[in-house]
Amino acid sequence: MYLKLSVRNAKRSFINYLLYISAMTVLLAIIEVSNCIAIIGRLAGFQVISLPLLITVVQIVLVGYIDTFMLKQRAKEFANYLLLGMGKKRLINLFLWEIVLIGFCCYLIGTTIGFAIYRFFYFCVPIYEIKIFVFLYGKSMFYTFISFCVIEAVCSYWLKRRLNKLELRELMCEGNRSQGTKDLWNYKKWGIIFFMCFVCLIGFVCGIVFLPGVYIVYPISVVVIPLLLSVFAFYKWVFGYLYALRRMKSVKIYQKDRLYIISNITSNFKTSAIVNTVFCICFLFSACSFITGKLMLQPEFQLFDITTRHWMGISQISISIVFLVIYFSILSLHQIIEIRENTRNNRIMGCMGKSNKQIERLVNRLIAIKLVFPIIMALLIFLFSIPLLNIKMNLILPVSMNYILFKLAGEFWACIIFFYICYFGIVSVMGKWKC
Image 1 (tube, rainbow, N blue to C red):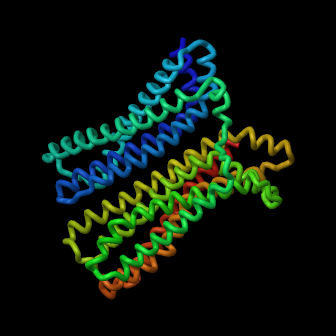
Image 2 (image 1 turned 30 degrees about the horizontal axis):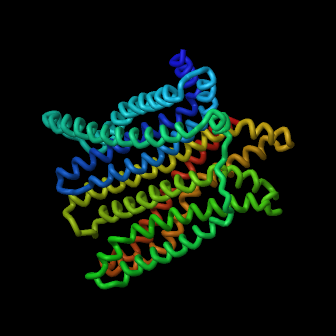
């Protein structure tokens, strides 16, 4: 009976599972592509093993976030199982096995898609080299399976701990629970931390630019620390400030649609701060990979031979696209699910006098804000760092490549605008259909 109930409710929750299935499939396909790049790169004499590890860490954070979202959607269902007499341990194991089995199906689909993408773009070998083909497929599948097991183990452990702590009453309210804090002024502390870390980051960038060549290795080796800390502190500060603004009940917040927008953004502001930090880091890695790849493909860049430069340039641009796909796909999918969950709120606003056009405009504003939120900190880093780093590049590269960093950064932002418009249009159309 419990198994039939679980299967039936899983089918009914297909739209909620769509976020998990799509995210897992896309991310595992990306890990498969990155493993193929790492294997071929190692054979060619390059060390790119850090790429799959980095994407695995990113996926652990994102899958953990999606697991939390799914738990909130099915919390009342789990409470009903407990009321019917199911043991809590049995309920937890049933849910975890459900997640693992769906994840394994995503692994099979994702690795197939990932290898097909890599085969199409990179690995055009003749038939007599079929042994290399089989070797690459088997080894990349094995590495991706290890990453999959690590992701599932970490996320399942964390989910099991959370379910063990939730009582029946908490499960009944979990779907509507919003995160809060007792100390409204906690955001000021994060603001100070952000300012200090950002100043340190700019200081390290200045060291890279102006220090003699012998000493550059020192700021380069530690610059990532203030970078990560400043990104995390920035989003903790921003979301904390918006939450405090909402709780202080200022007169300005009640004007226009500000209260609804801020309440929607800050309903889970602690989790949102972490997720936006991960997305911003993905965005920054994408920018670095794109600029490096485009630089490698420049004819004037004579650091390596033509074949090596071509392979490294294409790989770096591919990595950039990987991170952009992670960024826009997961954010867009979450927006589509969220729009579906807010259908009742939109109907209430319609009963209160808002027209369909006003509701549609409000939904589009929320979509635009949430898609652009992780980009804000990346844009701030670009504005301060690119002009400084361009000074160093002008000294190293030939005169014909002066201001190349500005040009490549401009091309990257042009790509971002294109991706943003496409994904915003897709989510907006689907959101209109859901409403």
